[in-house]
Length: 231
Image (cartoon, rainbow, N blue to C red; front, side, top):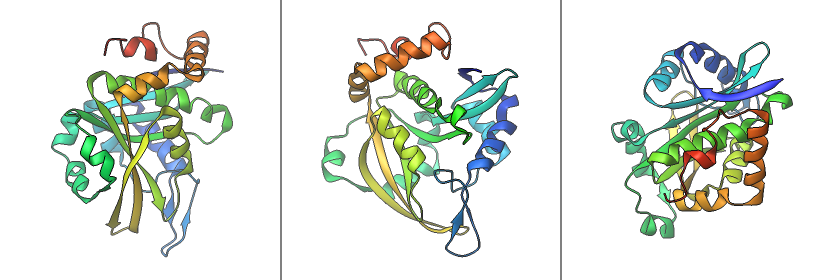
């Protein structure tokens, strides 16, 4: 099996929806939740995935043969965030005091979703997918935010991915949704200088060499190429 990371196309939207549904957490009508641990809690429609692919940064992991999308990652650029409800929700975040006083990035993005089929043969490629989209996001942004579900369940899968990439905890937010009730999430941020430093670590250098050897990234598309040393 060969896996490559590539930009998403509109034809991939139904597959993204299918992957999301396969790992989605659902409620049984009370306070109990079922489904894959580490999956998504809130739903996303086919139309929303089509919109993400049209307007935002979406990468997919495609396994072959035969070609099949087995994972995806979505980042919302600053232009999307500026007029979205996410900016309104930012006012509800309980920020860590030190972070709030030192943060100065004017252009930032939001890591919306990362989803992989649960089989181990596919999940091992999630780190390549997360690293690739993080690099592309930080080409044009000074920082990248994301949230990780903490209550009523902990999204352990997402947490392990973002810790590997180098995000830091910067706050938390409590929200309420009619369909799910009270939800608590931790907020994480990755600033470009910290990420560039992380890329120099041996584990990431080995990861990039392995990805190049396996053909996961196309020529000129490795993290080292995506973010020049002088950025």
